[in-house]
Image 1: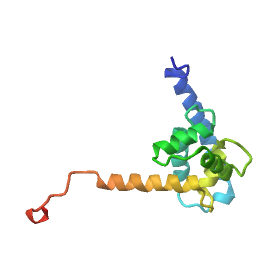
Image 2 (image 1 turned 60 degrees about the vertical axis):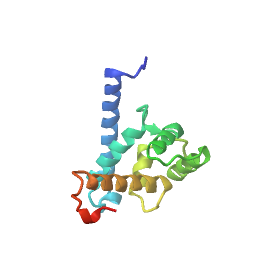
Image 3 (image 1 turned 180 degrees about the horizontal axis):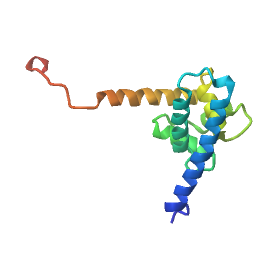
Image 4 (image 1 turned 45 degrees about the vertical axis):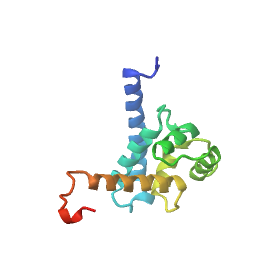
Amino acid sequence: MNPQGGKAFGVLKTQQEELLDSLNKEFLDDPKYSTDEDLAEKLELFKKKYMDFDLNAQGDIDIMALKRMLEKLGAAKTHLELKKMITEVTGGMSETISYRDFVRMMLGKRSAILKIILMYEEKAKEKDEKLAGPPLKKKISDLP
């Protein structure tokens, strides 16, 4: 049985969300990021994305969580590639990606591999949403 099931897991996720909200406030109050357009919306999106990846709600993304995340996105990577991504995001200072590192990467000017994959996923999702709805009407002339 999962020790983090039910209420305990809900409490853990609530605590995690409160922590990430407080970190988002730091970014909102930081003059370095004050010129970013739609910063509050971006940070809310980053928080949701990060919470999806931080499966154990421990406050960071380890190599296994990163591996699962990229597999879910259809962009499986080797262990070496995953280590390189983490090093790129953390500057080699950690073996896990903290929320601060994640947000700095997403808001930063550099194009980290992980950032590119996540942006690609958002674009694909937008395209899928545009395709939603009833199929277009076809004419007999459209038949092969």
